Amino acid sequence: MRTFVPMARDSLYDEQIAWTGGPKVLTVPRVFKVVAAVSTTMAVVALAFAIVVATGLRLPVGGLLMFSAWSALIAAGAWRLPLWFRATAKYSVTEKHVIWQRGRLRRTIERDAISYAVIRWNPKVPGVGDLVLERAVPTGALRRTLSITFADVETPDRLWAIVRGLTPSAPQGDGSRPLAQRLDDGERVLWTAAPRASRWTKRRIATTIGASAALGSAVLMLARVAKPIGRVLHQHILSPVTSGLLVGGVALAVLLLVTVACFIGYSAVIRPVLLAKKTRYFVTDRRVLIRRGFEELHLDRERIAYVITAPWSAGGTRRDLFLVLDGPQARAFSPSGAFGGGGGDERLVPMFAAIEDADTASELLHVSRISTSEARQAA
Image 1: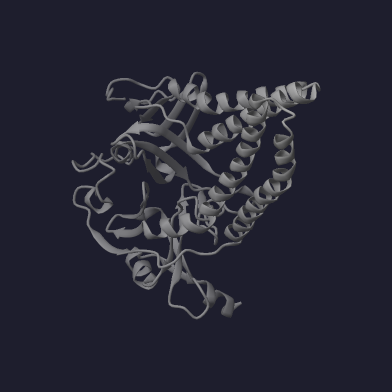
Image 2: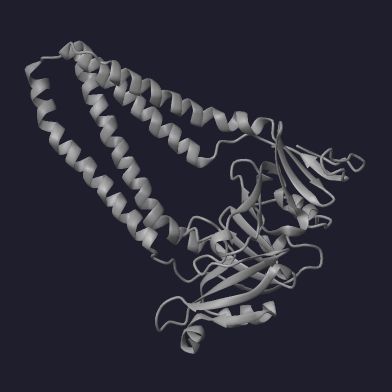
């Protein structure tokens, strides 16, 4: 929902409210969906084993029942709590601040201090997405992430234009349109490129090893339980219903491990490659823009203090271009992500990875350039 209230004033800052609204729809974040699915499977497996132990072995199963109930409670909470939490959220844009509020809980950032915005479009609801407002902070021990998320808002790119103090352009509001067709009025693209590869980071390698370990555990588990279960079924010790619960519980447990291994393996091996293919970098006469699938990063060029270039690989022509951000009493830089400590391939950050024409991009930005190789030679 979105409502313009030009005459209303915020009770805390006594500033005129330029925009106010809330979630257009209520959605559950992906991580909570994963937690709900895993917890539900664990609850069903524990309940099936409890029935088998109680009816077949005549042993107490209080611990299994407690674990099943606990897992079911986690699943229900992961599925419903985000909806309850977001339902009463209220978002406001005043003359100088952006405000997220839920009851007495309130978070604010000054509009002039916002470094950039990340928009995550909802693929199932056209024109709706999350608007994440990030503020650059000092490096070193004081580095931290200051951000406000307007979740599930209507036309988040138009709202970002309002936060920037601009009148939204007519093409904005449709996330299915190419990013280059949703620029500000009078804005034009000067340079564009795409990453040529996806980097195998230490985190990505460790995740791949973890996926292999999970898959190996599933195979080992199946190998160890197959013969004992076969002997039990062959001797007809258990009733048909109990036998079915035993086989079903073991099958679900193995399936859960295989699913987790496949999910982790996909996230480590396949997803970074797909994200690189869906990524496009833009430098306009006003902003730096990044589009990656349903995600977008919008950064005003005036926020860039200088850029740092680094070779993507030894002896190659591809280079990484890191954007050092500046703001009121703050500067943010990280060689692993240029902002916020490097989120690997998961987090969209202001940097160009594995591009062929880094020099042209940095020249167009009209800021000071630093090469890591030159810095090492000077040292």
